[in-house]
Image (cartoon, rainbow, N blue to C red):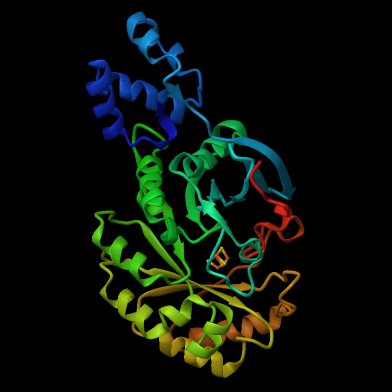
Length: 347
Ligand code: SF4
């Protein structure tokens, strides 16, 4: 069985050579039909119509299954869609409109085992890792079923991408392939809760330009561990050490995310300590107001509090971008994915 959405091009070439005596020409035709044209009936391509023997041999062997879109939710231009997987489980993805293109926020797992206190996905528990084709299938569906121009990918949906490292990295290679989806590495962001071994493994891969985001959310170990249990295993000093060693490209920066939660991590002293943690790392910090989730019970900061916190960080030399949450009404905001998936059990 050749599941095209799970095959990097070099592996597809090797498989066609080994099993069918064909190679790059037909592999590129399959890539073009699936990734560029969104054609699931791949054997209708001219390269296969001209080779009836090959078409007969491949019939029933080639699979293109991105999962069925079970539901979509819209808020202004933002779209959240739910994909039903082959075992009946569901995952959410979000298409976020930017000025000239769209960003797709993809999921890497069904649920998540990181247990962040402010996150709806954590409440689902961990069901399973997504396969490569279930990850690339989200991009296929966004582009070819929902007909959205997607130029950026952020792994900020359900799950911790470094907890499903191999599948995520294979999906990244497929998304990046020029003959396929053709998303530049600098337009792909992997966002981690701070899994130090994942950061170290990424550092060893030859993926220049891929962007690394870290969900920080706390100014010190006490607060961060309370919000993100992963910090008990890899405290902030270990995280910082891994980032200091990470081979950023020239003028590259880490993206830090800091969800500002009223009364939890939003004081002047917290801002000062956060700035101390960041120094001397090259960082662009996204400051995001907390999106209330049912079981956590804290409030969002008001605009004034957001501005004050951001100004304090800026005074300390931190480059801050204030992100005003979008998608709250359809539970597509940061930390809200999974709210529409109650009873998410396999069939
Ligand atoms: S914030 Fe991210 S890492 Fe944390 S529980 Fe939610 S999905 Fe997992």
